[in-house]
Length: 316
Ligand SMILES: Nc1ncnc2c1ncn2[C@@H]1O[C@H](COP(=O)(O)OP(=O)(O)O)[C@@H](O)[C@H]1O
Ligand SMILES: [Mg+2]
Image 1 (cartoon, rainbow, N blue to C red):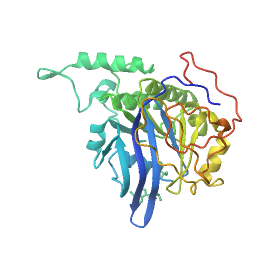
Image 2: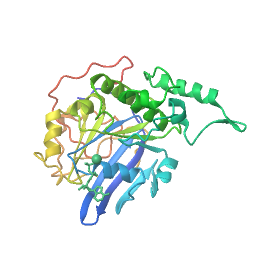
Image 3: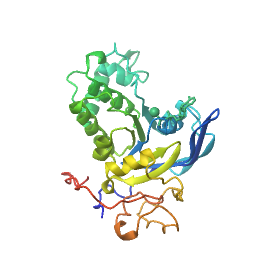
Image 4: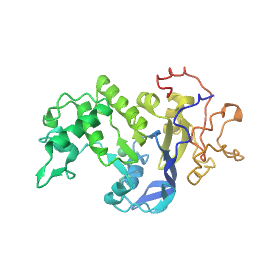
């Protein structure tokens, strides 16, 4: 059984149902369901071309969907532009990071949202707030007055993440944040993702790296050929199982996906009865339905790997 988690009764922030997206003859997404709660890290995994980037671009307002619905805080929304996404509180950190290399850390964080003191920029205030945010993230940045070009890959990722937090978004999306990083820098970024969870953001992490996914995510959503192919609680899954779902060695696309329920009650609700023929395993391992992940088909696998040590604060 999955251990109880703190921060339960986390509220649903975002629910996507039946999302479809075509590019000409290419069906990039077909009938995809996806959801994320406050203070939850959801990994989005799948092979190249599975539709991961397209799904997050739907959320980022880059590609409005052709089919399906999106709810934010329980309200139906249309995300037709990046400005719509930002207004809702959805921030995306794309792989290119989009930093201004010649500007320093403070300038990058506040670009376009500069704090002013009358007619002049309030550099002191911006610098202080930058330090406060970086401290909150336990970020290792030696100076905030150096051009970001001089920073390491992990530090640049940190700056991009910190910048995304200026507007206190509800959902932060990271596209392959560790792809270009070495071991130590990857650990730093994973640490940062944990801080995001602690701050209560819903985090969507696209990653190819199963070790990263298993280390930091709460839940994993597998896409294959533009369709859902499994949702797993990380505590119950192995990288072999995930890889089987990613490659199609295991096919859950025909499973009767329970549509994510409308925004769940703030109090935990019991999981729905498993539908006949659904991909759900037997009920013996389902004792953890109080973690806010209610309302969707989550495939739980028998535990085959040691549980991670509990963290000091009681969270995983
Ligand atoms: N802008 C686009 N125009 C045409 N086809 C696209 C576009 N973006 C993605 N696709 C296609 O949609 C499918 C899903 O791509 P993508 O979302 O990038 O997958 P992933 O990020 O999982 O690798 C692929 O077949 C890809 O070629
Ligand atoms: Mg992609």
